[in-house]
Every structure is written in structure tokens, then in C-alpha cells.
Image (cartoon, rainbow, N blue to C red):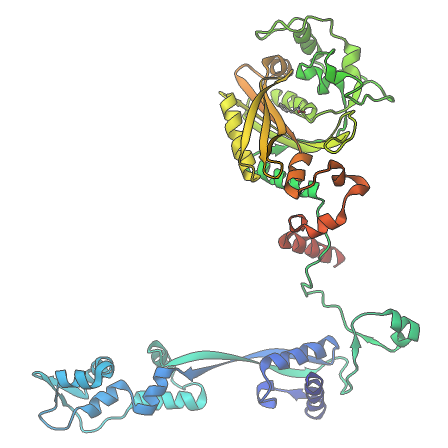
Length: 504
Ligand SMILES: N[C@@H](Cc1ccccc1)C(=O)O
């Protein structure tokens, strides 16, 4: 059918050179069908076409009633008998109902009838039913020469405007009446048979939005990371730069008031670098850190041991992103005071035996909030809100110990599947022994928390072995089959559009 239509369009062009209006040239074919054929012919440059819009008016049901039975006012006129007596208003209303109430006003206005006491009598002997006549013109021609008439009929909801699209067509650059089947794809068969040599290929339509790409799945960890990032941004946090995996022990431990003998600084727990093994220098304020370790200050008696520069210079793979926070807080302290909220989500390393729930390399989600007049209550309230946004509503906090926070709280969340509380993170109020040497003025408190990205991801995706989340063990089926992993449509569209823009 559509091939036939295309051929008849081409043949008509061949004999008449152009088609002024497809509406009259192809009376029985719908505008959609015509457009389909024209688009296809246009893509082969066989034709050019322009869209024509024709507006016309059709008669509404009430309009049709007035064509068939006369306008309401005319019907009222004919209902009033000639002569002095006329008809009582009561009788007119009971006999004509709706027509009486709608038509009386106009009949009075037209001076066809008038009131005489409780009756209505005729003023003229005969009338011209102009409304009916106008409606008949519209019905016959689709319009009316007098635009006031159109406006009036439309206001009375007797007619309705309609539009038809049609097209004017002319010959394209490749015009011919011969229709060749166009190939969409270059196939293996075409290559084998040599058919590609004579094949005509369909042009690419770069304006088409195409099919939503099914690829582009985010790894579950990255998906959850994006969700965390969005929550942080929504709650006014700034992202910390986290591209340094190697840091000095100074930033990873000493600046955090972790004593140099602390178990965490053991080879068993921390990866120390072999080459280079030490940082070339320590930050200028290192002596303030040394002092607080050795002698205390800010209400503390310190650890009272000889602090070693060499120990502080040892390079490590950062064991927590608090090594990033310590540097950020130091930077913040160099500027005039302002409340600040920072977060980071990135990799950390621990020299741990790998098992179903532990990896030597994992991700930490860390947030710090610097402000005046903050309490542990502020931190708990914040975490309640933060996790609620993640869909985690059952939280519990348990007192804990960190060298750099006091008080410290472990964060537990209820795991529905396991029917138990699982630890998801650690938090606390940073100690003055850590904050003051970094340069933060008295009165500024900093609350912080850290959690692994892997734990909530495992809970969310029902993964019970952490190794399923890394390296070649990632089960792509899990990623693809889990709707939560899919790039949402909007993201897919953006990716696709930017690809098209780059291609253009
Ligand atoms: N650094 C802690 C988390 C933490 C961050 C900030 C404040 C308190 C705790 C950890 O690795 O578990």
C-alpha cells in the first residue's frame, strides 16, 4: 500500500511537475499516511515537501439541532401565535422548556416578540432565521465570509474549529519514478553476495532520538555512591578531593591524634610503602602536633611519649578517608571561620585477610560538619536524617573509642534479611587535641562519620559475599538484571544525546 502510494506520488510529479495540495490530489488518503510516504521519499531525495495547514469549522451537536429545527429564538417566534393574545409566559416555558429559556432573550433582542402583561405577543409578521442560515453556510463551506459570524457561533458553542494538515510536493534532487528498495544495514550476506555494490542505503536520521540504549549499567557500588553523593549535595555538602591514595602517616594518623604506638599503625593493619618509604617533609605546623602527643594541651595531658618525625613521615596507603578530612580541616582553618560541610567517597586500604565481609581495599563514605555550638545530639540528628534519605530508618548508636573523636559512636542498622543489627559505620565529635593543632579556633566543633560503601550496597542488592562486588568476580547478570542498577532513562538519554553531539 505505502509502496503504491509512493509510486503514485512520483507518477503525479512526473506528469504534473508538482502537487499543490495533497488534500485535493489524494482525497481518500489520511494525512498521516501521506506524511509517512513523503518522509520516506524525502530521505531518498526524491521529493521535497512543505506542510500546509488548513483550518475549517464543523458543526457541533447543538448547531446541528438548530440547522434541523431552527434557532431557539426562531422556534420561540413560531411558538407565539399571531394576534393580540399571544401566549402566556407560563405556557411557553412549560411547552418549550430549555428552548424557551435559551431563545426568549434573543427573540426580545431581535424585536420579534414583546411582553404584554403576563403574555408574549409577536411584534412582526415574519422573520429570517439568520443563525440557521449562517450555520448552513459553515456546514457547506467549512467557514463563513463574515468573521463576526464565526466568532458569534463559536461563542455559542455551535461550531468548532478543526485543522487538517496536507502537503505541497515538488521534485527532489534525485527525482525518478523508479522505487528501489533501500537497505537499512550492511549485512554479512550483502558482503558475501556482493549485493552491497548496487544496494541503495537508507540515510541516517540524526534527528531521531532512537531506541533507549540498553547498555550503560552502573556497577552497584557506583550506583550507591551516586545516591550518597546526591544526598550529600542535597544537604549542602561540598566534595573533598580524594585523588591521593598515598599519604604520610602524619595525615593518616598523627594529625588525628593517633599515638605512634597505636595498633592500627602496625604492619598487620596498614600497608606501608617500600619505595619511596617516606615523605620528604612534614607540614609546617608539625611541632604543634608533636607537642599535643607528647605534652597534651587544650585540657589534655597528652600521651607522654617521645614523638618521632621519622614515624610520621612514613608513607602509607590511606587506611581511612579521615586522612583526607584532616587535610581539609587544616586548609579550612587557614581561612576566616565559616561553618562548613564536606564529604568524600573513595577507596581506602587495610592489610586485612580477605573473607566474605572483608576486603583489603574498599570504599569509605565520610562526612564532616564544622560549626559552632554543635553537640553529639546534632550529629545523631544529622545521621538519622541522612540515613533516612537512604531508606535506612532503624538506627542504633553504641559508644565506641576512636583516638580522634570523643565521644565516639558506632552506627548500627537493622538488617531485615539477617534479622539482626549490623554495624554500618563509626562516628564522633573530633577531639580538641586533634582540631586545635590543625588550627581550628576554640569554639568550633567538628562532627564526623565514616562508613563503608560496600556494606549498604550489599544490603541493598542482597549480596552476601563482598567479593562478588569486585574485580572479575562481578556478576554482570546481577548488574543487568537488577533494575536498580540500570541507568535511569533520563541519564541514558543524556549520555546518548551527548554522544550524538560529539559525533556531529
Ligand atoms: N575513620 C573512621 C570513621 C570516622 C570518621 C570520622 C569521625 C569518626 C569516625 C573509620 O575508619 O572507621
